[in-house]
Image (cartoon, rainbow, N blue to C red):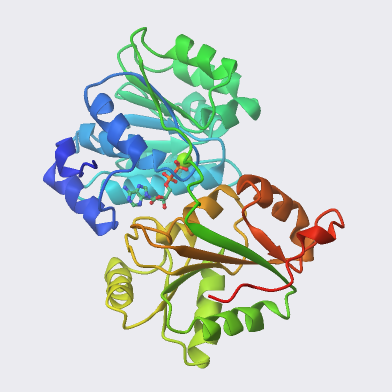
Length: 387
Ligand code: ADP
Ligand code: MG
């Protein structure tokens, strides 16, 4: 059973924004969080990274903002400037339909520009790192009297980074009457204590279990390569499985573009997709892939979210993901709808630590080829099974 954004009773404008962002249905944390948040409940949400927590609070925020009121109505704290930017960009997109203005404030860059923005522009949602937010409150430019929603994003990391005093200070400056949403990947005692300190007594807790490694139907191989053999190895595999439908994952947008050019040069029927592509371009590539006009799709993790294609035969990891949790998401693109899947990863000797972690993560199911762990020759599989 899965529900749609329409079932969440969102405004026409917000539904429109979500469609433009390519979000076809809510993720689990969004499905569970949004109804409570819309009902003004305080909430503690726990889910691993990449599960869509930003929109889980971003959507209710946008829905609750009064577009006619210029002052900040939602304040979001994030541990780093990168996250502040990322979160503000996502909320800006969600709020586009309603015409909501979002500002990111963070240290390490000119405060004057941020002060000008705060003084002279509409800033209905403010996203920032605790230090800079505190500074702007003290300079009396960040006005908090209209704030009705306060969000702590990645609260566990903020505590680890020692922001607790800044956070308490900021909290003390907020109006009495407000909704507090606290998001964290983990809930250690310190986060529970923070929830008790900041949230109303009857706060809701929403937890999403980490995705199980359902890889029984997926055959997994990892080949040892070096930087010179990485591309030739991929090319050989693509030739060997030339009639199969495949997704190739790689880490960065730049890697996607480069790989696309190289494979195109070798006349593969290939398409590419990453976050910088317009919605229209993404839809076109997906359609080509679905209709088998191309049989190879190169993508970043982010771009692959929301891709719902059932008949992918092979997932390649051209590079191992930095965050190994994504490995499971990636290979889960194959072996769907009762079909057998194949996952092939390439890694260099310098990635040994990650490969060790990966063998644990996959409970030893991944077969290593030419890759020795702990000098254990038994790990070597001489022949790569023909399929
Ligand atoms: P988290 O904060 O849990 O780590 P994010 O909010 O950063 O996760 O979301 C991860 C990625 O998933 C982002 O690129 C985001 O745009 C995308 N995403 C979020 N919700 C959806 C959805 N419902 N459908 C498709 N993609 C989504
Ligand atoms: Mg996040």
